[in-house]
Length: 339
Ligand code: DAH
Image (tube, rainbow, N blue to C red; front, side):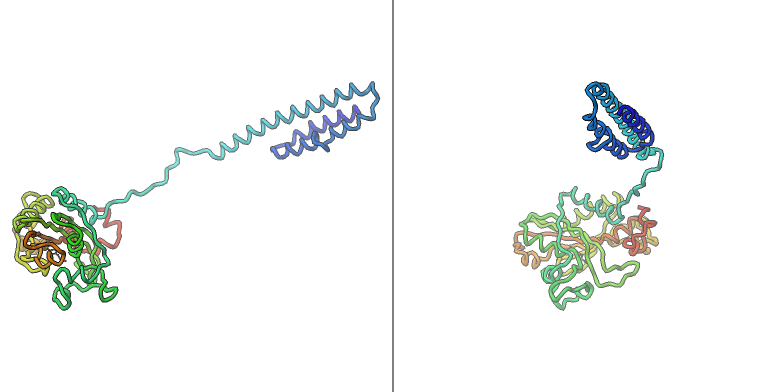
């Protein structure tokens, strides 16, 4: 019996040398100390020993058990440490490695200039209004005094969803929506996308942007229109810019005008930018037609107003000397990075 126990101890010592994982250690524990393990079995056969033999053998069994248990604990600690070190080694972060680059985007030139325009008008007390791009014929044409068959419809051909629904050709329908839903005083701008059934070339695109403006109150005159738009041009192009209001025709304003500024490139003496005219047209405007006020339920004998419409693309092209409108929509980073 004594020999057997010494052998068990030796076997255990030998087996421990080969253990390299916690899993193996657990199998080892079961093999030696488990319910069916060899030490337990040895213990069971102690029944056959004589009373004199028993204390010495009992002590030996306990010694062997303590020995194995201590060994298991030591090894278990060592394996834990090794495992942790291995994990740390594997998860080591090399802080000298270059990081992942997140390319920083830039604002689109259309957005940059639109923000600038918007800021100028907000500074003058305007608020921002919006309207749908898919619009009713009624708002886009009819209520703006452009009935079916009106020649202005020919110059603003668009994409029709059905007889009465279309992609808006101008931001002017927002005027109607605002006047229908608000009582004067009204002072809004309405920037947004507009559409026309035009073939793409350097100066045309089926999609472009406008900024609409509308002011309605008691006693609004052409003087307010001129003063407001003159101040706007000076803020956008510089104090030395001169403005010129030319008579024009729009169905929804009366009287109507176009606004020219002295060419910022040549100061009015004539150059390539202004096609030697010294002036550049920048927007359409006018006093809101009394008919339009009445359609929106605003008493034209009490209230009057002015409106204007600015083409964003053309404004940006002038600003940065861009000569092809298609560049705005092609998403070519070599172009976009320049602004
Ligand atoms: N909607 C016009 C266009 O697209 C531009 C315009 C002209 C807007 C005069 C106005 C205005 O509000 O008063 O050609």
